[in-house]
Image (cartoon, rainbow over all chains, first blue to last red; front, side, top):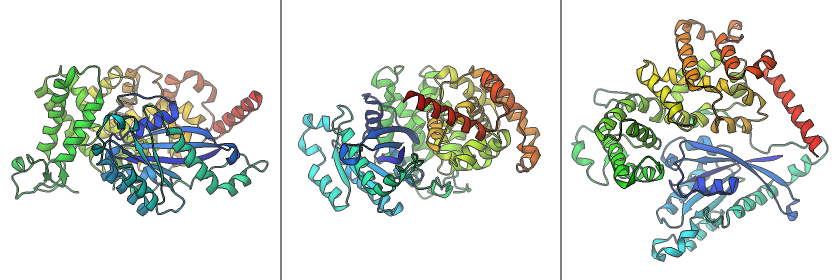
Length: 207
Length: 306
């Protein structure tokens, strides 16, 4: 089974855990307790025919929003293959914070292969809000383009577009690793992990 | 940051030139490098997300917010997520008496903050208390699986265990309060928390042994299964472990010696008491051999199902 490490980052209360729960358990709770440290879940997806119907397993690290300014975050995004940087479309302050996360990832992970997806959540609330109190979609889209990020707007509550995010990332990962995947399909080689080796580097945590 | 003469009890330096009491009234105040607005906003959000069935309406939510806001202001430290859950437990335990809850919360934070909420706290605890004890108490099993085989950094999973004092790992106050009450009276809190953590890990040794990769192992550590023994047993074993260390401190300096690689009698007792059937069958197995056997079993099952 192909395994990839995916991490969720973003300001507090933007709905990171809700996105994960929609993806992993196809459920939604109006009230979700704050994540402390991080949560860990996994889910497999099957890509379309175009991508060989490849099955991928995501190991998902869902981090606490407050850790932006702390030093805990690096131990969760270290060795990640993909990152969802989440903001709340009804909370204009949350986009600049998402941008800071993107900057941090680019600077600290410094790996061209890391797939970053900018995700605007709570799309279901857009219709009931004044457009002036919303994040401008064009702004977010432009930032994503300039920084070579994937971009999606989703609703963890209704489920809209959530699977699409993971499919999109899965397809990129497939293309990125196509050669290794072909190799792994040869006889006696049916279990391969494409994660970079994990390290036990305690320096990047809490220092 | 080290404690100094003008630092507060958490070792964080106070700004001498300012009258902190006035400064932090301003919404944009930064006290000791901590933005009071950030703390207040975060408290606001976290308390709203508690959604405890035991809080009746906005008035009680506000009482809880006020306790937390007052506490961070008076101590000049930043609020950290998790404090709100500790505070809620104490609020309910003290019949929603705000003053009493503040006192109790302040008392708990006196040791809990430096241990686990301070930035380098968790790592220091791992280095000084948890790691040496894990290696000593379970060299052939827990240490072998978590550290040697899967090379998992303890910090990634134990932050929540420690900061919330097992609230999320256990199934409710009936399970975590007996641990808390023991903890309130015990002298070396960090050491006792390490003991409880290790006992809880010993209770899931069969599942940890079956984990085929790092991911399965992490899943267990971050989604602790339902406790398989009464909580009184966990507390009892943790107390024995706590005292056991006290009389064996010299040995711990020789963790590499052959003698230490042998099974610890307490671990055998805990395994027997928590997973009797499993223990009877596999007690003499090496964990790596056992993992291999489990893998073969899984493969056979998978082939048969095809």
